[in-house]
Image (cartoon, rainbow, N blue to C red):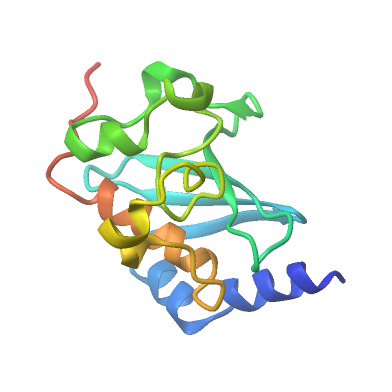
Length: 151
């Protein structure tokens, strides 16, 4: 097993990850190195699957997109969460939806040197691992900025 995969598995077996699972905030769907599929629950009980690409983990941050489990492809733009900061992070127009616009995403940080000072808690920290990214997403999806799904 690769060193990065071992580190990821250790983070997914940590007490902090398990606590989120126990509270119904998130769960591991599948890990097929270097891809991890994690389901995160929104405040309105909608479930969103994040497809994390974890090459060079944990030294390098992962990148994630929203994933459609039924179609096995990125989630279509009309089904992305929206509202306030939620729309800023889940911005399908940025990079064609291939990554989330978060300081802990390896695709988003380059070119945003100001984020190091403006959002220090969201800058990737290898020792915190994937849980850092999942908690940031969960915080957004649990916020009152999330717009309810319309039929």
